Amino acid sequence: MTKLAVVTGGNTGIGRHLAVAFAKAGHAVAFSYKLDETASASLVSEIEAIGARALGLECDAGRSAEVNAFFDAAERWHGSAPDVLVNNAGIQTWSSLLDLAEEDWDRVIATNLKGTFLNTQAAARRMVAAGKGGAIVNIGSGCNKLAFPKLVDYTASKGGIEQLTKVSAAELGPHGIRVNCVAPGAILNERTLQEAPDYAASWGRITPLRRAGTAEDIAGPVLFFASEAAGFVTGQTLWVDGGVFTQANWPQDA
Ligand code: NDP
Image (cartoon, rainbow, N blue to C red; front, top):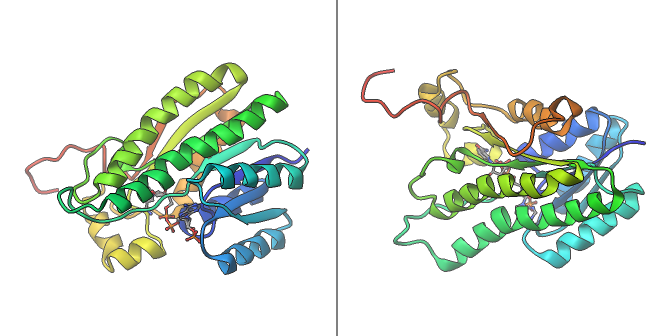
């Protein structure tokens, strides 16, 4: 039977590319989004054009009632529990710690960290009930391990995802569910280009592989973690960052 891959925040950027990549790899794909119905409809058409099935549903990743309704609908639509979940939905706000608004902290933690928890719980409950195991891939960031100024809420959420990945792997392993994390470096997409017009050049300069990444760079590692090739791998974070967050901060010219 065709496997079901669920991607949160599939409308744009990395999530959209992952949804298409899973479809090309032979999965049916259900994805959630929060705002843009038009983008969702265009992604469904794009996936159907390559001969796969797709379901896009409005669902705030950080609200449990919506997440449970999303997974119920996806399960009904596909006819069985999900085989793969990618926790991709994530947002950023920019502020110093001294100025950060409480509502921004709440929004970022709710989407990124609580959203990863809620979607993991909803998917894993259904995988356990179906008794077929599964794979969960969390999308982290360099913030999983490094402190990024003016991204205190985002950094805290991704640091939480690092640990959530490990404890999820430990608890879900006996059910045959593997949980890993892909932590991207600087990835050029519409959002990051809007943030900084020289995004690719400025990150390329300080990245050992001398370029910014693309959503395509993220798809391979995510598909690997979701596949049987990673059948004995769980609780791990893979840095997909061209080396930028592995090198030391070193007082000499590159
Ligand atoms: P985008 O902003 O392009 O995509 C985020 C998607 O999430 C949007 O499609 C948005 O859709 C959806 N979304 C936002 N809030 C919610 C919510 N509450 N519930 C469901 N969906 C939601 O971002 P990226 O592709 O750049 O980022 C994707 C992931 O990759 C994030 O987790 C991010 O932290 C991570 N990442 C990205 C990096 C980069 O350089 N781009 C680097 C490191 C990590 P809509 O607005 O229609 O709801």
